[in-house]
Image (cartoon, helix red, strand yellow):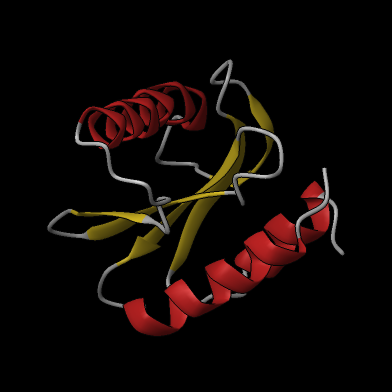
Length: 121
């Protein structure tokens, strides 16, 4: 099991890492952050909280009995990945920003999944 700081440090080792945050999905407040010089992670955390809430609402309205594995937002120069923690745990998600030219999306998703599974709040 890894704490917030250890999880962020592990995420920073992903090729193309730009920034990451661990976010309390009930409040939109960050529990921890790393990187982000060009990204305001506080704004991103609050905004992505709304993305996760919206997707969960749509899933509920569609009566989908499933869980969000991750949400991928493709930008021209970056990948933005949102990975909610297991539903049995707190309403927390990991937000990861990668440089598109320097990253391998498939490997990053595997690493993000591993980091989420070992995260202990």
